[in-house]
Image (cartoon, rainbow, N blue to C red; front, side):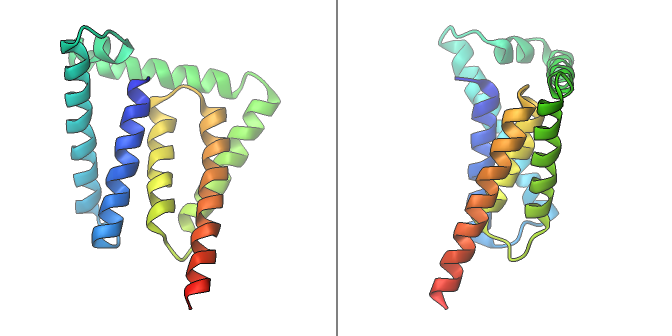
Length: 156
């Protein structure tokens, strides 16, 4: 159970809900997703702290904004080190990111693949396993986009 995982899930579900309910994502709607994720994260961290739980997330939030920024900086540094630790890891991250960008630019747009893209983008920031996130995120986004495209073509 990770704090980052909860944030990623919450962001993906918020984007999925907005896309399914309202269509395209405007800057205003993206800001709404950001506020929902931050509020949800604070609620989850608060509940965790009240129940006696302790994690790097509760400790970072307990340290205030400086603690959060410091924790995020540590995660980004660890991600960078893991990316360049071997040629295979670097290749997986680069190819995964390239595929994610291609699916982000691909038309038509689907609510499920947009939700996955949002979740993967946030996961790249809050988690420290870039190889897994980029490579598996690209595979999931690609599979989801092609599945949605296949469903769309069958309905015609």
